[in-house]
Length: 152
Length: 405
Image (cartoon, rainbow over all chains, first blue to last red; front, side, top):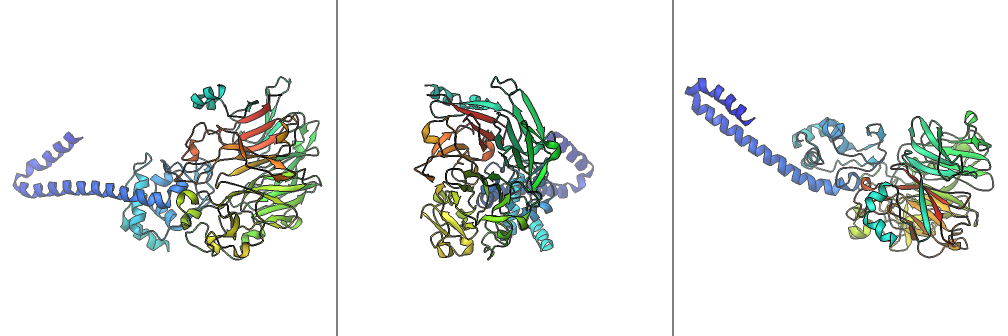
């Protein structure tokens, strides 16, 4: 993977020796962005874990496995890994009787959590989407803000 | 010595259905992998009828029969195209409930007349949450049906943090209680029923006590009191008590959603959604207290008054309670997943409950309910005086016998 990327960069860079200076700057800033986003992900997950412990854990459980028939699991389900909009709305508006996973209905009512800030919701969803065996993209406060504006 | 052996290899044995019992009791696994086995009833000929919460191969009721009388089940059949919880046998009829209706089947020579199923009660509310319609019958031709409240504490938006409770609570008109119907009449619904018990959030285990001639119900207490921080979390998670309630007459009111039983204070107090602080009693003065209280959230799903003669005398007319096991006691470990015996004397709980059957979870230190291998749910008594326990996690059924003298 790394080799391939190096090769690719070389191919782009070689014919363009004249603009080497410019290219170098670009490469540097891409690397910097990458590092920043890794840090962003990690710190978002760390903050999200605290939000999860306060608002989510009692029902969804420490390992995200939920409660049979009542509170849905958060492990590799299409709800958790799928649409961010649906997920954010779920947090903002709560739900009852809506979630069905593999033919299993979950009957517990989820309380709405509109009091959480955009940052808290982004963090907790990023945590959930990257914990319990899940791997999915981060949720940003800006995304939460946009969805919240439409949800009202 | 034997007990030590069982403990050391707990998990393997649990997989085979091994449970822990007092000395001189033994359990046989009579059903395995049956499905979501909720309540069960045993006919006078030994047939076991199990109500499934979800259909399995299109069947909602499973019957286990020992045809040749060698003590082993050799005939398994099913019928009933509805999931549900309640099941009971009375006066030659098998009663069973979906989450909205109660049906009955005449037992002709111990065969349920499935072609002529009668609808006894219909159109009861089912909004998902707390929808089990558990049933019990008295000796005067009545059937009692639990209608759980589709709510935690009757807030306009269920479980919304800090939201006040609705006052009066509109749910009490159609749920949050136990309704009485005629056991032999067809197509009854709310207009024909009597709201026999009100102010119960959710009841899954209930039974008629033939000694007192009254209805006993087990209430599942409310959730979310820890959010109010009235006590340290480790104490708050014990609140409120799971309650054993006795309805001595029609109209018995046990206070939900306005009140909860604070076992630390030993009284019914106002819920915080109605202005309470875990100590104030207000309108809860005069609300009927429980006859016995148990630690919070253990989910009593089965109640059975033991009327048999096979167990030692102390068990006669006492209560067995199947605790399904909790899910919301974090940060503490979860609790329950056992069957307790509540001693009774002269129709009243007498002394502390004792753990009768345990080891269902297959391990210690359960932090979430998915870790529990089995979850006890239903209880029934065989005509030979044995005790049956069902599990709705893996579909096990145990028959417990007294083997002593």
